[in-house]
Amino acid sequence: MTGPNRREFVQAAACLLAGAALPGCAGVAAVRVTPSNGAVRLSTRELPQLARAGGHAKVLPEGATTPIYVLAGENGGYTALSSICTHRACTVDVEGAQLVCPCHGSIFDRTGRVLKGPAREPLRSFPLTATPGGELVIRLETQP
Ligand code: FES
Image (cartoon, rainbow, N blue to C red):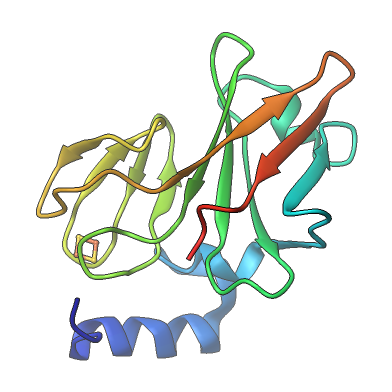
């Protein structure tokens, strides 16, 4: 993997100045969470956007540098994906049913599968368990 190019650097600087208002700046809105025993526990009561199909939340575990998207599926299931593009490590944005990379246009579906390159590898996924009471447990062991 190589470092950011000029465009990526300029975008990162713009995000710092403009907050989440610009496309590609979703990292600013991450909810900070504290892991326990290698896992993050979320509640759909505290993050109501996860209680509806198609909703999502972006969380940043304490001590981690990689934010995670938690995505609510259409059939009540959930997915936890790294927000870091597998092409050159830009932060992807959730746009409806897709995750779109603003740097070079890669598109992923809500399971992390590549729909359009240049990325070739899927987004990193994290094991997630949902309880009937609305608790989501995300295991972090696979996060770099
Ligand atoms: S960093 Fe190049 S498409 Fe995402």
